[in-house]
Image (tube, rainbow, N blue to C red; front, side, top):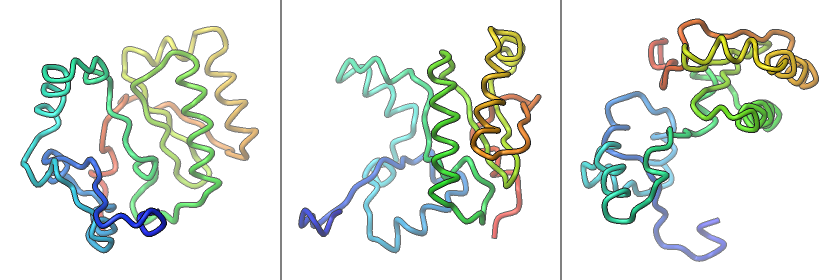
Length: 163
């Protein structure tokens, strides 16, 4: 796209906080010479949120982060359009149900839903929400659906081995 619009520089939103964890996409950023000005300025996620609220009155500053869909898959997983689309469909369903701080983790034949621990019981009991989620997953040819009892954890794959 940068070539199509004749852009000399492409920037993206990684910040200094992102440099503290494993980010497999960083390799692609480096290879494509994409610039991360917030990280270069040593601005942390907290500082960016504070500035967004104070300087620009952006109420979205308090919303949970919504990271790249690639974070929904274990490291070294080949990403396909179909699998990315499946995550998108399942997460859209959850947004439509009023949830906003969760992850749908996709691992082969398995979806693992991470909700904050205090929302798991609500999800399981509320107006067939869990049944509809399961039915939707099955319609996407995903045979197994689980709810992670540890709850939502950003960067949960960081605990796994990375090559």
